[in-house]
Image (cartoon, rainbow, N blue to C red):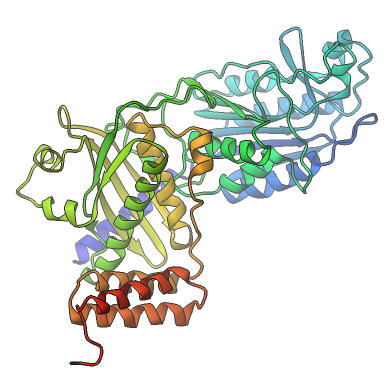
Length: 485
């Protein structure tokens, strides 16, 4: 047992170390234009600075830069980036395209005619060039620069600005626009712009890849703009990158389908809409070193099963879990045999580790038909408060790996994952449900005790009340007589 605990401790340390790559971000908010003041770019820059620092970035922040200051800030950022693994550039403010090139507009720009752009603005691909020169592993460029601007309107007969032109993302990079090329974006009516509000909502979620995060932001913006603003992502990442450090790590030897060389938008996300796909979630393995934590392991199994079932509400996905999967999962049956018995194409296996209020999951996705083949093996970590968001993100990645990627329209329809209000109440709830599912008089009695304890800890825990209702329903069905008769 001591050896197992030592191994688990070392594994936690190793996974934590994986997320310690050096990260540098340049954040710029230009809003104080003499002829067209924008409400939110400065607030966006300040909010992004805080959010990026929270996920391990060193941040250089500037506001309301003039042309020479803007160019110098980009050059200095590129020079420093050579000593980092991950680079991120976030710009909020006016931007414009001219003759096929995108330009960031400094606050001192005088743009009477389109020919003034080249000499009074800074080309956006200057950032990309500096990032490529740095030769670091991963670069992300986020351009919230598509706001309808007065300069561009005066050069064309169009009633509104044309937004920005497409930039192709080089290998190992992601280029993100607040809206699709040629369109304009909302500056927002609250503290932050609509697109940045979406980023702030999702960028610190555990177990979420950068691409998955941007898909959720796209759904957020689409919903909150009444389908008028569609963010655009051009990516050439060659593997999964997790923004929240240490929250996910792929074993590349097992990650067979690891190319993301595409542009993500509402029309071309990979999906399988004509036939039903099937998957089974096998019982998770308890590697906590403590058999008394079987309840926690079972709770994680149920959570992932539930999130996959949610996807089945918007995609043709059949999910097998619970007692059916448990009855067939044993050391004597092979993966193909299990898959054949329950008629599924894919199976999910997982192991659970736990220290205090942190949970680590080692998840494997296996193709069982037409031949057994590992699809990916990934390790995720999260604190208990964010555990449901983690399972939601894992389910989303599984859907992507089995060619059922979720479009922004799908994501809008999915229920929002809740946050655990009180970790101790959550643990008591899981103990209660674990005992209830034993379907014995003693198990139901203990289950009700734990559920009452969960409510005592957190009187607002709606799930604990639902568990109590289930327990009393079991009593009504005759499994347990509280009166002892």
